[in-house]
Image 1 (cartoon, rainbow, N blue to C red):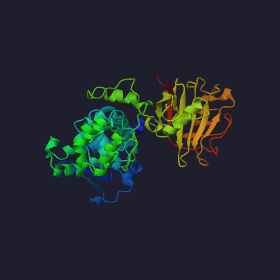
Image 2 (cartoon, helix red, strand yellow; image 1 turned 180 degrees about the horizontal axis):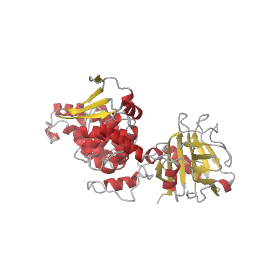
Image 3 (cartoon, one colour; image 1 turned 120 degrees about the vertical axis):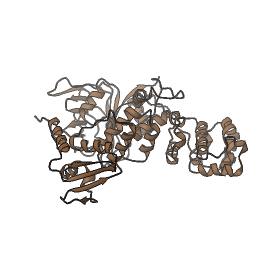
Length: 498
C-alpha cells in the first residue's frame, strides 16, 4: 500500500523558504522604496517552475549569489507564488480582486499550470458578478485561460444582457466586441444587438451628438470608421422590418449603399435575389448545461433587472467534444430510428453532468458526480488521433458495493459508438449483444460498458487510462485494443423536453 504524507514535507519546505538556509538566489521584488528581497534555492525553483529552468538574464553579487530583479511584480503576488512553489499551499481568501488578477497573469508567465487553473476557478467562484467584463477580456487574450473563457462564453451566450447592459460595456475593446458578434449562438434579438453596437461606437466618440438628426456627413463617416470591423458581423437580414425602419434607417449612411438597398429589398420582397452576403440566423438553442447551476450560485445576487435566472431557463448545447449534429445522431440511436433526427427536432435536452477539463478525469470524480444518474451518454476525444468515442447507458450509474470485484447490470438498450475514428469518418454504432454484461461497476474504474468494450480505469501508477476491447457489444469501435489517453470527456444526462 502506498501512503502519501505531504503535509510535513510541505511544512519543511515552507520553513526552508522562511529561514533561507543554503540559498543561492535572491529576488528583488517591487520598486524602491516599496521593494522586498526573497531568498530562494535554484534546485527547488527549477524543479517546480518551467520559467526558472530557462532563465538566463541574471546578475551575481560578490558571494556568487544569483540576483533576480522583478520590479514589475507586486510583493504580495510574488509572495503568494514563491510560497506556492515551496509548499504547494495557497491562501486567497483575503486577497483583493486586483491582486488575484495580477496573480493569474504572473502565474501564467511562470508556467505554473496548476496554480493558473486554481486561480481561474477562484475567480469564477468569487468575482464572476463583480468583475465580469475584466474576466472576459482576460480570457479572450490568453489561450491558457480556457476555463475562464468557457465560463464567460456560457454566460454571454445565454445571458448577453449581462454584459451588453453593464456599465463596463462601453469600455470593451473592439476585439472583445467582435468576438461576441461572431457567435452564432448569441441569444439576443438582432435588432437589440444592432442597438448595442451603435451605442458602443458612439461612446468611442464623445463629441458625437446624442441626436442623430443633427449629425453631419462627417459624423456618420466617423461612426462608420469606428465600427468598420464590427458591422460585417451583424445579421441584417434577420432583423424585423419594424427594427429596420426604427433602428437601422437613422444610421443607414454608415452602411454601404448596396447593403442598405438589399436590406430594404429583403423586407419588401424576401424572394428577390440580393447581392449582399447573408449571414445565418443565430441559433436558438435548447439543451441544458450544468453551468445553469454555477450561474445561479455565483451571479444570482448581483445580476441586473434585465437578467432573470430561473430553473426553467434552457441553456446552450455546450460540448467540448461533439456537435449538434452528433447530438441528433445519438438521439436517433437511442430511439432506434432508421432515419436521423434533424438538429431542429431533437426530442431531448442534454444536461451536462461532468466535464473532465472542468471537474477532473479520475474514476473517483466520475463515481461521485454520476452516482444515481440514469439515461446518460459518455463522450470522449482521444489524444493525438482525435477519435470521438462514447457510450449510452439507460441505467443509473452507481458506486460498486463489492470493493473486491466487479458488478454487472443488465440492459438491452445500451450501446457504444465511434463518431470519428482513425480509419473512417463514418460513425459506428455498436449495440449490446450480451445484455447481462451490458454495464459494469468497479471501485477503481469510471464508466465501463460491457466487459471492457469501453472503459476508464486507474492503473497502478495512479494514471487514468481508457481501453476498448470488443467482447459484449456487437462491433469494435477502435481498430486497436491498446490503452489510450484522452484530451477531454463529458457525461450528459438525457432528459425529455417538456
